[in-house]
Length: 181
Image (cartoon, rainbow, N blue to C red):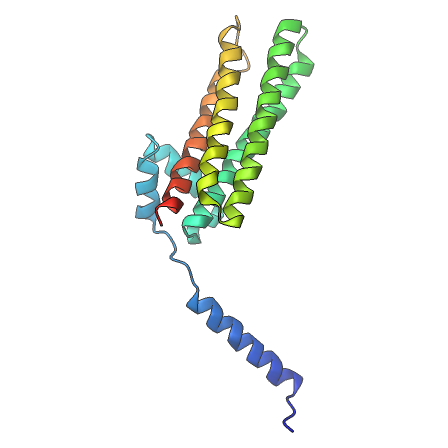
């Protein structure tokens, strides 16, 4: 009968995990590969700067880059939704308050779409990510349409919508890249 000490068992387990990790190590994207993907967004510089603003981009594979882009888009959407809610509470103009509330609801839906896209990413349903991102873009476009009738846009909602659409475009490009693999 062979008896192993606790330290031998721990060493053996560690070696197994190390060998599994090195054998399944994903290809980290180079800066040039990230720039190539960003060139497909129509604004290479802004895309690259945004992606590089997240520390995870330093060592990320294609799936990780998609996750980073989804997280950045979600953060942007949440920030804009918070601003919309704040603008709604601050205005005395009932018409403008209604517009802010309508757009806030669209942003709720866009955020939900991004959450589903992230779940699809983790489950490996890469093709379904595009469906969710397209739905999120539609929600933002509805908000744009709502604000086209506004006489004033002191909150710069139209620009905020364009900023989120750009983030969503980055998600689309990075997730499309996953579908090619």
